[in-house]
Image (cartoon, rainbow, N blue to C red):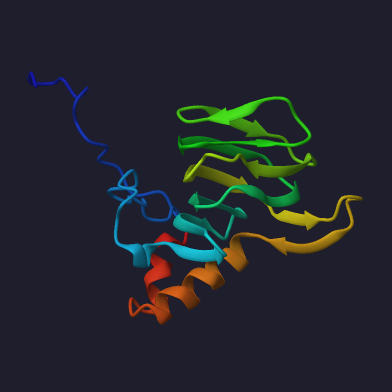
Length: 174
């Protein structure tokens, strides 16, 4: 860096107030990581948390499904972003497929039924979910809800049970 050239200098001002620490999670694409990191969600379904943003009401996780068939029918209260890392899936209500290496945006209010097709041994997708999933029946009647707080609670319980300690989940909280 030439004298007087500050283009490569780090910011040297004061830290802005109320800014949380950065969150960096290494090895997120290592899908064969320590099994204890995967939180059970249902039979043959797990999630690996990456971020629980309790102040903004969203979570980021990797969902791993090792079964074919219907996973859930749900409505979103906020936008969802999905990147398929392995396998494929689709919604019965739409004609598009989320294939390995693909990206999907799901708008708030959309109701859909997630299916992993026969022949897919493992589906793994990175999800960024704002708001909640409202699980519904075929007529849209609410059956249950899942949000950043219930996901955090499930992670704390699981990490306590597998010996990592409930506070292991706190590293993902922002």
